[in-house]
Image (tube, rainbow, N blue to C red; front, side, top):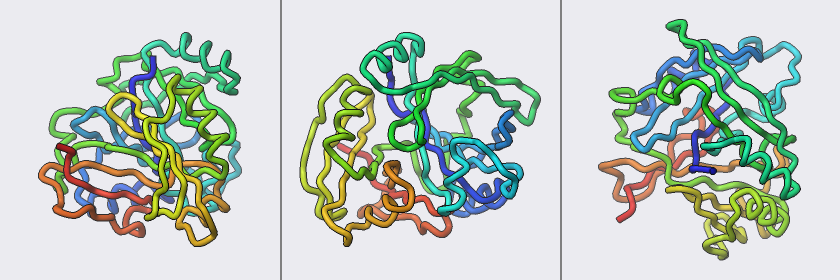
Length: 264
């Protein structure tokens, strides 16, 4: 079963600079470790259980067949996200049976303290059209920091929603309806984005698919450069700002992150 947003992925030019910049934005950043595929990461964990992964290539100038390598050439930033699974084998069977081209892949990371982490995942190519799906082999508590690591000077407590830029809303709805086994909760025009949109709910999180209506939409340029994929993330803070505020995207290494007060 898919449980909700496990984490969002932000590609940064170098990990040291990414850690410095996000600490400067008021986040507590915990070194994550190295992956066998030539990347390393740091984590921003939230009280709601989700987290942001800051990821960088250890040798950004070297050729790589990594599925996220192409995003280096278009500025990095928010590039992907993962949904959690309680039974990846069953979810993978359902997704491939629904015609979604998910492929399984084992994952691993060595933490700085030497602890070895393992997980199973499944993804589609190219990255961005659909989230990848992840299930832990080692306990999730080893992969995701908790306790004091979830306390941030900027008061952020979690992820509320993601907006995904899509070139064809009808086609994207078909993919996400099959992925989530659910229809959109809301379909509307989004005047702020100059887009038609459809919003899904998975667990406690919302995922908005948004298709620009014209070239003046802020979605248009990122969509042309990257194809379908994450455009922005909305984070909750408690206490939160009276009015929603955007973090400086240059300080956020190209990611579009908005902070709002919790609902209700």
